[in-house]
Image (cartoon, rainbow, N blue to C red):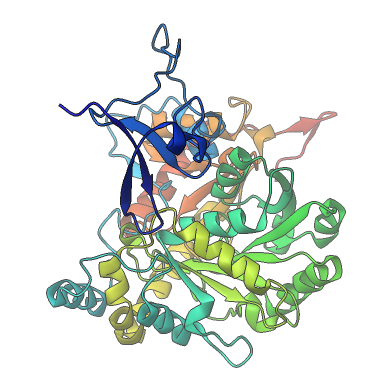
Length: 475
């Protein structure tokens, strides 16, 4: 067997060249003691062993630990829920008002046109391979056409397709923020923002929403939090967990604050157009004169297919403030997982262009009706303060804890609600907003009514009037 050594070099095209190794060859290569130089040249012997051998490099025992990124990743909802003792009443079937998935109970199917578009994409066999990491050009143009308006025009180059809206948010935060920066996040707000930001060394600053003003933003509080390391302001509209919808006037005030402090906006608009009749809320980009906006959306909620994992980022940057660097940054970040599901990309044109308007209207009508049932029923229960939503699929309920001395906090309250009545509402401590709970209004109507009956029974049993200085303050 030939035991000569050779230098094996890979060029940029993946082509290997092999040169016999001798003293003259070594002197010109800079092969270091590890057998590798700075140009990717490896010193190997023909028999395949690495040469020269690295002395004393063997570990003495197994010691595999999770990365700091993994250890610092925490989903607040999971942290709260996993710590709860959830043992339902065996005599009452469980009613889960906690899950933000509209498909769970089977009462809200997607439109037939959506299913047909997927079937056609599969049958075409055109979408079985890899797509560009940012998505097929045709699919991106379809999304651009769907959301483009004269006030905020879009082209295919302004669209990045992602694996669900969650990845869109991840990419947006990642491209705008460095370790040590801070982002401004609504409170109460979607917990994923913190889950994504904290492991990257990004500080999360919570700004207040005002329940007495239908969850409008406390803009003075926002301004007090902005500093030179603030890299983006996150606006969730319509809101999870509040179900609130900002008016045009309020959105304009938000944009003025962002403009005054030169802070870009990450607009989480996954619930865009899921607005109850009588309300309206334009996209932030359609109102912006100079504030650059990364708008994150997707199919999950409006089309009722969260498991299909199709999202997008819409880049609104008419004044070229983001410039080419942010766009290129998004492209590079998208290459980490090579993009969204190609079959769903292939179906996008049919989904966006062929879904019946009656489907959208029916979904919104159902959500509004269920919200009204829930709000009206809980409004008459002493100790509870529901806030009527204007969109999305959630309703927040305040708990006057002074009237419920049996419980320490909202987590304790909702835990016992499961134990006694088999109704699970998500404690708002999961959104860093104690003494409230969130109800998902996508359950069937009869289930919503039954849940409200049980919540009433629970509250009536535990409610205690509050007295101060001998005066009964119970209304």
